[in-house]
Length: 186
Image 1 (cartoon, one colour):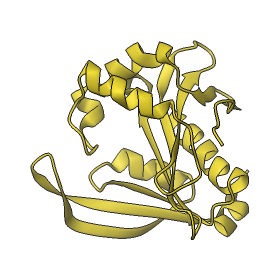
Image 2 (cartoon, rainbow, N blue to C red):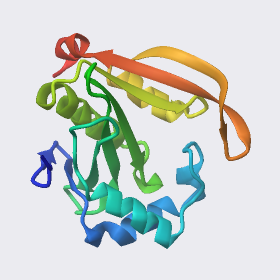
Image 3 (cartoon, one colour):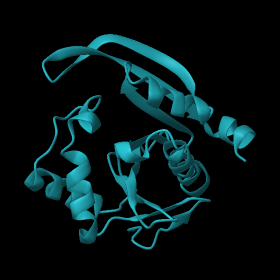
């Protein structure tokens, strides 16, 4: 089952499947060193970002590793805000992961929280997930704040567990269970 029809509207955002028309905005965002700073990858060139976009076009949520990555579009301007993802990590145990990348022009406006909340809703309410995590470079305090605003609890801090861009980095893991979601969902 593909999810090409998926559209999620919030007060300020439209989350929708990527199209090839999104390539210029995605290429611009992925090429930026300030965007890649806390991610596992270096800034990407156009060819690599087009390959990423091709993966974003395949919306499946059936087996481990499948993901739904949606483009975040600002309703007021129609401009590209960033990408929001829900990954199926463990089908048997109904475990998922939420993530987001925002263009720096849209930092500090609450869009990460607004979009990620809808990805949690998609995971818990639509797909019946039991547990969703958020993983991040522990230095990324802004992203940690987003996960806390969503009601996710800081569950783990792994010290120098990943070699990223030639540097050992710490990883923070936040999590939420379905029953916690039902207690906090608005």
